[in-house]
Each structure stands twice: as C-alpha cells, then as structure tokens.
Image 1 (tube, rainbow, N blue to C red):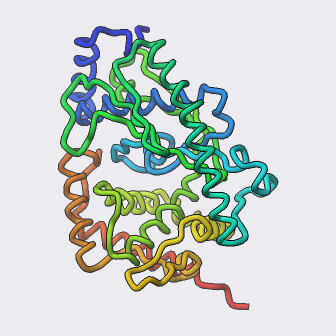
Image 2 (tube, rainbow, N blue to C red; image 1 turned 90 degrees about the vertical axis):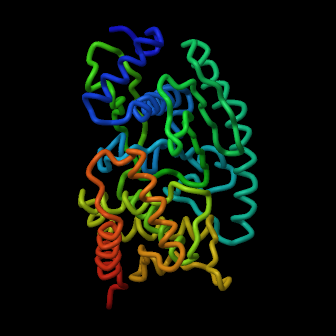
Image 3 (cartoon, rainbow, N blue to C red; image 1 turned 135 degrees about the horizontal axis):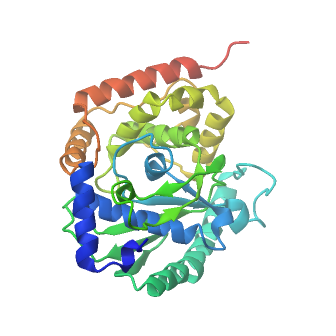
Length: 343
C-alpha cells in the first residue's frame, strides 16, 4: 500500500476530505491526528521507548477509546527512575521525595537533565525522522515541550492549531501502564493507504482518572484557570471515564489514589486564594471537589462551548449544565466511597 506521506499533496488532501465526509470529523482534525500518531510511532520506535509512557487525555482517546473528543497534544512521562536513578529509590514503583528541600533539589536536577535529554536525544530523533521522510514540518522547543509545526493540507480552525505539542515530564514513573496499539482515525475509511501506527506504553486509565480529578480539584479550590484555554476537556473526560466504569475501578484502588495524592503533594504544591496549601490528601479522602463556582464557572462554560463549536467532540455534546450534573454525581460518589474506613 502507498504510504500516506509519500502521496502527492493533492492526493493527501483528497484522502483527508474523503475520510472527513465518511466519518463526520473535520478534515483538519483528521490531519492533526495523523501527526499525533506519527510522533508516537517515532518516539516509541526509538531507543528511549523503554522509559517513556504515553498518558493524559490523548491516551484515553487513542489507546482506550474511552473518550470521543479530539485530543490534540501528547503528554509523555520519562521514568524518573531512569533519568534520576542516582537520586531516587529505583526499587520504588512511585518514588517521591521525603521533604520539601529534597523535592526542590530533585526538581531542579531533573528539569536540567530533562531539558538536555530533549535537546540532545528527542529533538535529533524527531528531526532525523522528518528528514528521512521528507516531511513538511519543523520542530520548535519551549522548555519541556516540543512543537511539531506542520504545513497543513487543509485550513485549521482558530481553536485547533497546525502543530502537535509533545509535553514531557520526568518526575513520575508512569506506573501502572501497559502496551496498546494506536492507529490513525482516517485509516478506517481509506484502507488502501498505509498510515502511521504505534504501540506505546500507556498509563492505565485508572491513574489518569486520579490525575485529572486532583487537577480539577485544584482548579476548583483556586477559582481560576492558568495556561489559557482548553481546560474544559478535563471535566468532559471525567464523565466519559465514569461512563466506562473506570471511576468505580479507580476509587476501589485506594493504594493508587494515595500514590497520586503523595506524588502531587510532593511535586505540585498549590495554594488557594487565601494562601493556604491545597490538600491533595483531602481529595482522595472524601473531600474531592469537581464543580467550580464564581467567575471560573463562566470561564469554564465559555471554553466548553469553544470546544463543541470547533468539533472536538465527536459525539453529541451534552449541555454544559448537564456536564456539571454528571461531574457532581462523580464527586459525590467518589467522596462517599473514599471516606476513611472506620476501624
């Protein structure tokens, strides 16, 4: 079969438009999805694959089909035990520092090593792959992110950029995880063309639930959102995790919940508007908050509508208020089951 990237640009564009017509997905999302899978294929075929873990919303979409929204960025963890084996307990499944001063020392050292790793290993790997394939894209690095900026075949939208962001972290082991096959969405509609495929190690969705739930908990406690738009996706993802019964499994694993809380408390110190430290232990002990109020609620609603209007949800999107009702249900159910066990 002909390789998608080996086709003339006119045929690539025609393929995207045909797949869009058959699937109902916007062609610019199908195009970006191809670059997402290409990035995963390149990274997990490299010598660094053994220590990389694919995680976040894109993993829920691409690896588990739990969510049916387009997730445009790729979150990756490089095992802390591989990059900082001289600092951490390499035998621990999820090593965390024992003190604030140790955390600061670990974080400073790991960030320095990760920046060098990205510059000296990952960027050359991706660059060589682009050159080998004579692909129309360039790389741009920004601290712990790499942007694959491709020449679009079809016009992107205001919300969806013609770039794939690879965001790396190295303060977690990425455990638990498993290998999962990844394919391009367009491939189901054009069987005569060879699209990129990948087989990355993927964080289990149970941990992804606790990662997202604790992040939302922080947002609710702070009453504000940092990092621009695209934050409403977390609330959407929580509801789909619940519909797939992942929340029930995650809540049943108290050890996993505690591991995520310990990791967040050690590495991601956050404070509320009054300057009080946000308690991650409370989030996994019956006091999880998933529904914001005040001005942040209006910001969340506006971002949700942007996500819907740009076609990132590949299913009928429920009204925003219904989304909040479902999140409130998840919050109450989780809190009821995570209350400390009485002796």
